[in-house]
Image (cartoon, rainbow, N blue to C red; front, side):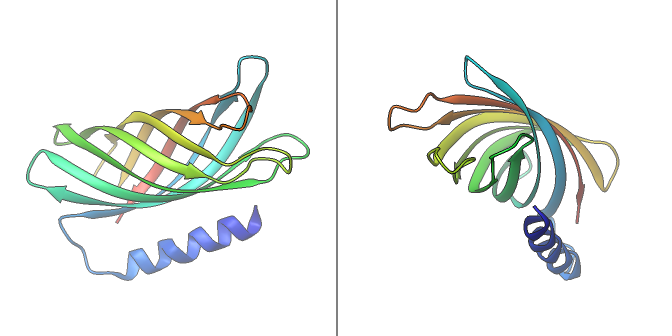
Length: 155
């Protein structure tokens, strides 16, 4: 987990050093729950992303993440993906997302996550968000669901 945090902190430092644009870079911490129909566990992680404005109302973005199920015998799951959505108000974003996630455990499988969320600006720099993802695992492994809440900073 330390490697994930150090890697994401380095990306955040580079993003912070870039000139300000109408588009925005973001770094967030998040926590939530993952469940598969028979079991549930807490999960925590971090993410970095960059959103590109497509006019006044629409946006698309890319994201990298590192999440960990908070139980023994699990590993950090690395994710890469994107999101697309619209600005409901100048401070509220509604979006759909899709992410490829590496394995959460030695015996699990990687997954494709599809879902959506709402991001609310708390002021000019900070935001909060709520997100849901359905993990399509495959290979006769049960699918899973993830509910996340997060706080972040925009650059």
